[in-house]
Structures are given as C-alpha cells and as structure tokens.
Length: 69
Image 1 (tube, rainbow, N blue to C red):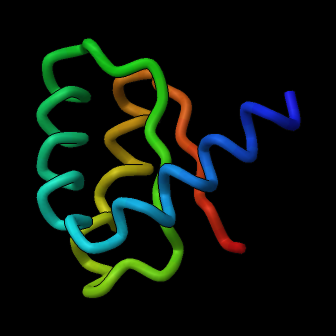
Image 2 (tube, rainbow, N blue to C red; image 1 turned 180 degrees about the vertical axis):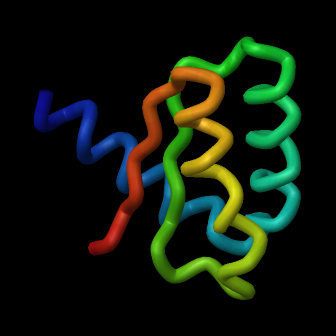
C-alpha cells in the first residue's frame, strides 16, 4: 500500500508541467466511463482546470485523490 502511494506521488510530481493536458484527458476518460480513479495535484496552476473533477467523479461514481502534500 505504501509503495503504491509513493508511486502515485512520484507520478504526480513528474507530470506537473503538463497538468492542463492531463486535466483534459481526465475529463474525457471520466465522461467515457473508462477511468477507475483520478489523482489531482493541490498546487495546480491555474486551479480552475481541476475544480470540476471532484463533481464529475462523484457524478460518474469514480474515486478521486486530492494530493495536498
């Protein structure tokens, strides 16, 4: 479990530069019903690109993780 958590944190830190593109892809996969979980970074800039994701996850009954480290 800890290894999975560390892997998720590493992935979040390594893709911070392409956050806007990943937010678009996360929205597409949620709308298509093929995503199992969504990981969001708390320091996304601008924050508005991920504000809709928790509501969409709850609507589509998907799990989301908000990384606030």
